[in-house]
Image (cartoon, rainbow, N blue to C red; front, side, top):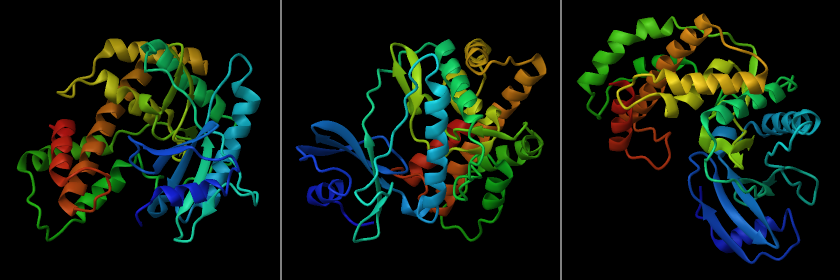
Length: 315
C-alpha cells in the first residue's frame, strides 16, 4: 500500500461530495481499515478498505451493509434512534471508489459517541438489541477472510502447520496449548444466528449512557450469539489471571435479555463461561501463531508485543 498524502485524500473525497474540504486528519485506533476524519461543512469519515482482507469481497460487504441498513431503518427506530454508519454513494452511484493505485475507499457521515459511560446492564442491552435487529438480516454473506474468527480448530491447524521457524518457541505457552487444546476443541455453542463478529465496547456508539448503535460492521456474519457475548465479556468479566468475574457477567446477561427478549438458563450460562475461556485461549493462540510466523496480521504490533499479549491471554 502506498503512502497517502493530503492531496490524494482531497481528490478522493470529490468522488463522493462537492463540498470544499477544510481539514483531513487520520483517526487512530483502527487495526484493519485506515480511516480519516474529513471536515467539509459537515464531518465525514473517509476510509480505505483493507484490500488484503476485503478486496475480493466488495460485493459481499455491500450486500451485508444494505441488509443491515434496511433492518435498522425498519426495526431499529421503533422505540428510539438506532445509529449506524450510513455509507455515501459516489457520483456514479457506487458505494466504493477505486483510486488510480487500485485502493478501495468508502465514505460516511461521522457519528459522535459519548465516552463509554454505559453501565453493564445497558451494554448488555445494546448487544441484545443489535441481535434482535440482525434477526431481520437473512441473506448475510460470510466473507472468507473473517468467517473463521471464532473457529478454534482453524487456528489450531494453522499453529500445527508452522515448521522451520526462526522465532524461538515459548515453552510455557506450548505446554498450555498441549494441556488445554483437547478440552477446548470440544466446547461447542449453538450456531445459526447473525452476529456482529467483533462485539466489543469500542465498537459501540454511546449516547447518554446507553448503547445507541454499532460501528465496524464489516465482520457481520452467520455465527453464534455466544461468540458475540464472549467478545463483549472478555474485556469486562475476565481478570488478568483469566478468572471469570460472575457478577459483571450476570449484569451483562440481564441487560442482554432485556434487549433481545430472551433469558439465559443456568446451563446456558455455564456454556457461555466455557466458551469465554475457549475464545480467550483462541485469541492468545492467534497472537502466538503470528509471533512465531512473523506474518504481521495484527497491524501496529511487534512480535515481542504479540508474544506478551499471547502470554497474558493464555498463561
